[in-house]
Image (cartoon, rainbow, N blue to C red; front, side, top):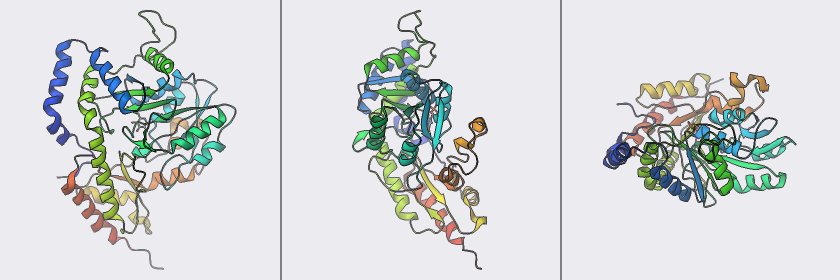
Length: 379
Ligand SMILES: *Cc1c(COP(=O)(O)O)cnc(C)c1O
């Protein structure tokens, strides 16, 4: 039996009855779009994010688009963001007509390099869009200080970091807006697509809410060109069952991550992710494969692990700035060297709250068997 990178089996086992009842309740109510179930979840999710407002929508991608549009960002505007992220981060910036400006990440954290971020600011810059990648929170005190100095908006991509905190405060409560994804593999997953925008400003919340429903403040009056992007009641019902368990699940992720850290620390050819900070939510456990012999590179290890019954994933094999879709922006090879190297070296080990000791041991044992085999080339 292969150890999967992610599995919902045990979670469904645990919450099955509650989920069945919640979903059936919505089915029988006939209220599938909007209604009390969605409103109640939005209220509870806002509270979990430490903000007064959360607006549900169709996906994390839409959350980014809605937040950007809600803040008035569009053609002619630049938004600074990392290239080491899921494609949707930049795609959303382009979708509103603005231009993503990519900066490199730090090798130590995989997160946006804040020195480079500040140097990338131009008169056209309107917003900073840091990504809490793999669940690790960006230093939001510093991002907000930079934004304030230059009069910029801050939009947090919290898609991989639901429930994470920086300096004791939830991600999504620092910037003008936080954008969350409820894609099934995220920290808080729906039974399908879903997302939310968190914010403190009631007017921004209202604009986002209107944009998500065809720019319609009241029935059949359209004051902006918007979208059809709502959080379905069935998804809200599933999320409402899961939300009370989120912090317990994050604790399980943290324990798995620190166990990987202790058990893999001495293996040659592996660079482990930095441990802290305490608010890290470990949506992914991403290490780097840096052996001395070319043959035993990341792709070799991935293949060997697969044969040993351990499935891993590469987040992400191609940096956003090198994607064919962004060829026209003109970022050549070597323009963001840390990002480009990470894309060749990273490998994500299985990590999810129900992974458990036995399955994690199989991952660790497989790595111990495979990595000592790597010998440095003898001259
Ligand atoms: C998943 C993800 C998104 C997009 O969320 P969807 O719900 O899949 O649209 C955006 N940014 C990052 C960093 C993500 O991981």
